[in-house]
Each structure stands twice: as C-alpha cells, then as structure tokens.
Image: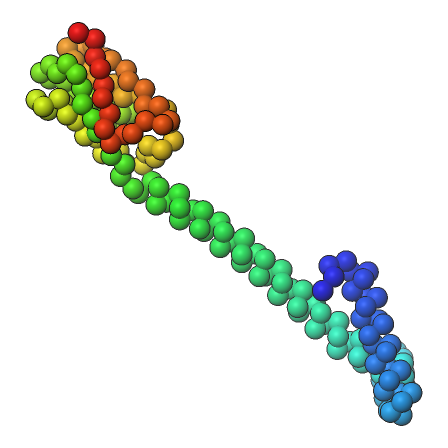
Length: 166
C-alpha cells in the first residue's frame, strides 16, 4: 500500500466510487443511511458504506506494518545486544614466551597478570576483552622495571614472542 495519505484516500475514494457505480447502476441495489444529522440513500449511501468499511481495513494493515517494522527494529537491537553480551562473557587467551627469562617475571594486560614460568612461557585469560580489537600493550615486569610490548593488529596472540633487553 502507498504510504502517502493523499494517495490512500484517493485510492479508497475511487474504489468506493467504482463499487457504488457497479452496485447501484448495474445491480440496482438500494441503501439508506440515517443519522440525527443527515440522511443518505441510493448510490451515495453505498459509496459511504464501502468507504467506511475500506478505510479502517487500510488503517489496520498500516498499523500492522508499522508494528512489524518496530518489532524487526527491536529484534535487530536485541541481536546486537546479544552479540555484545557474548563478547563480554567470552574469555580470550593471550600466550607466548619471554626471552631472556629471569626469576620473578610478570606479564600484565590492563587488569590481569600472570607469572612467567621457568620455561619462559606465560598465558593470560582476559575477560571482557576482545583481543581482535588491537593494539593492546602487555607489560612485562622484572625487578621493578616494566617492558612494554605492543600487540599489533595482525599478530597471532596464541604464540607471542616477547624479546627483552639483555
């Protein structure tokens, strides 16, 4: 259906007029509408009856389409929120090695840290962090000194190799 109200009213008017012509000219129908303010009979009464039946039908269809569009918008919003929620619930791992290894080394990612094992390996689990959105900076701490390491956009976070100055 057209969304322009003038086109809708024109279309319903012409449809009602055609129905009145067909019913009253060809089929010799009769109709009477009586109210305290006015009285109509014949083709004009038939025209008014057809129009008064068609317009609420159009209005109902139009309202239904609006509600469907609103529901589709809400569905899209909910799907977006669900995807965001899943992203924040997921744990993303970052792991790799630190060379050279020293006792008491720690690797930090914003709000989480882990110790570096004797085999020079570490593993961080980061809640609420989407490690695909980079760059991120890891900090390796040893003897009160921090060594920043930037994780670039194309870097594999499952096998980082962090070189430290000797």
